[in-house]
Image (cartoon, rainbow, N blue to C red; front, side, top):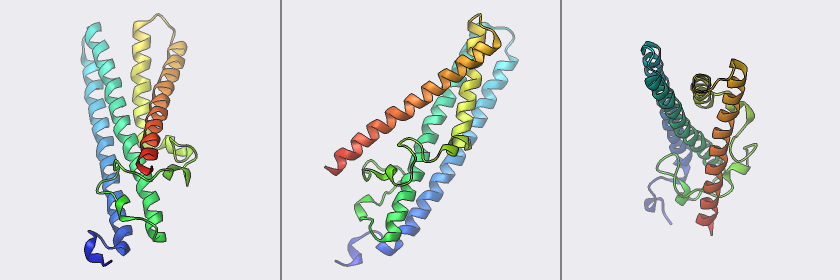
Length: 193
């Protein structure tokens, strides 16, 4: 077969994947800025609201939902970057089939088992990634708004409110990651068979 049948020649796959990775990095940066600006607006509204408990409660819930929404987008971008890196390694080896060369960072059809090569577990590549801004900032905002919500709604002291908020934040985000990756891996297995 000739290269004329393909959109991109095989020797150009690494270059195309680098461009996809660059695009995914740009998306991550834009999403982090969106999160910071949105949280700033909500925090400003929260601090300038004069004593209305209902409005403050609503703003706390919106703050949590905004941070959770950002985490979902940033987590998908994190996975896309990991998948593109995996594909880049396959392209450098010359083993990447064109059907797996994505048009965007997180294609519906993915190679099964791509996480097993260099991820410590299916939902995170390495432990210190949890301290990266894509992960840390949404977690911090969810924790802060949850602490404020618990403290304002229940008659708990500061320490129990903080500990409960830490536990809730960890459980919510961990369960999200585990469930999402579980269903993604099932879909990857179906696409292979």
